[in-house]
Image (tube, rainbow, N blue to C red; front, side, top):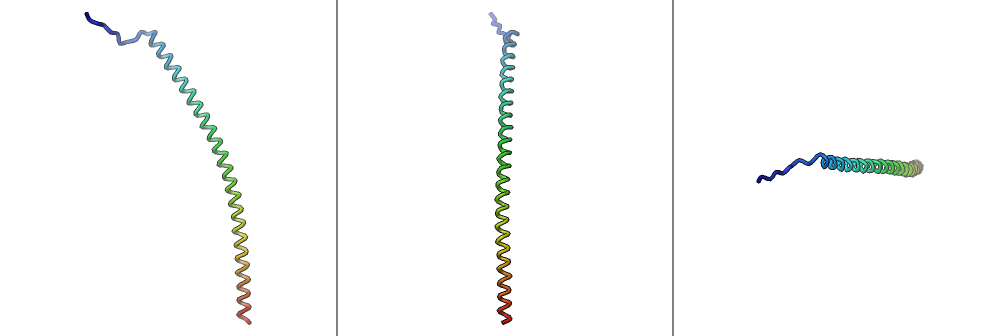
Length: 92
């Protein structure tokens, strides 16, 4: 009395198994495409935010540059005026 166990599946069951695996693979591909689409959307949003931040920073830098230039000119004018006052005081 030997038991014979068949380790191989009949072709019909194998076909159904492959069909289920194929569907699962297609589902995974669809999900991955969705993930790629979301990533592309995030890239677009991030790029837009970076462009906005750059324009804000450029505006702030231009404002600071104007303030520094103004202060520099005032400092130079004050120094020249004081130098003139000192030179006039020495000649007296």
